[in-house]
Length: 396
Image (tube, rainbow, N blue to C red; front, side):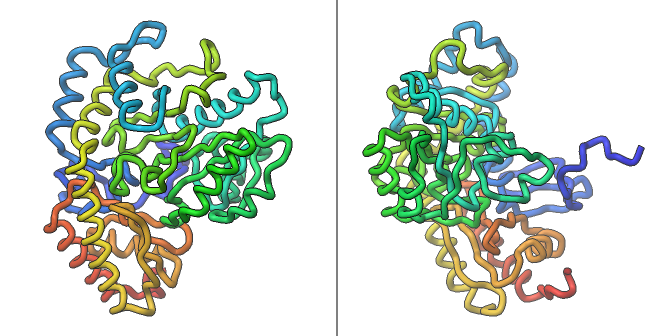
């Protein structure tokens, strides 16, 4: 056989982690890497957080899985906590961000169609977004690289430029059910929406009885310095997808909605075998124990400001390489003047620094939220060494 046992859909690099210690990963050959990728914004408490590990261990020894045909005291507890902390009135638990977005799409369609408006099924989405890898979520994105090999796409999505309010307004038609948007695009290059854009979408949704869906899979759960990014815009969505950091590394996600938005999600309309399992709920509770308080969130904002300040001061030393710094909290991006994947590989392979490439020539900087000043110093030392030794033509 020529195919690998792991289906070869990832261009896997030579880093092979087998252990994690706080903000570092250790490979099978013993090499230590500073992890400022966090599993792409997942390991927000690092790799060995005692409270998270303890919660998972205790729950694993008690009850790991039970069918959703039965009552779920664990799910009810975490759902109530999320309701109390956010705009939402109800929660559906999933296993991933893509599933959370799928649920959001279904919730938006069900809102209209449960009232007899069967022609209201189309979502206006925004270019360079990333919403997942299922058929519906790749159809919600305009990115050809995700479409190739999987055509035809699903109907029901219309693409508009990100942060283009007039374009979004012009796209509204008789089939429109709502808007699906990342308040801060992650894969698209750490691009934050403007206040005017998101407020305009909120106003259009209210005016036309549309639903405003936020995809906070990457930017949510304290990553930007508030529990969810929408809080920084002074408005609320009707539906929100969350995942990644909410489990701290354990696979889970959730779709949150207002009572009005969820009016079509009744018995039999949706389900999940594993969604809301007791082990995932224990992980989610443990994460919220740590991050859902003003002290922790203020620390994220302060550390984000320190890291951003260091980056902004640093990039001027290499004007041929770096363009600008963007993002909020500890969801930061460094925009390069060249394609970023070679530089990300150079930092990883030569300087044991893990970051993530993104669109718009951007390197994502997504450290665990528990970093301290020593980790920021180590990051800047490794980044500086990487920039000084980088030769694009040699790496290519």
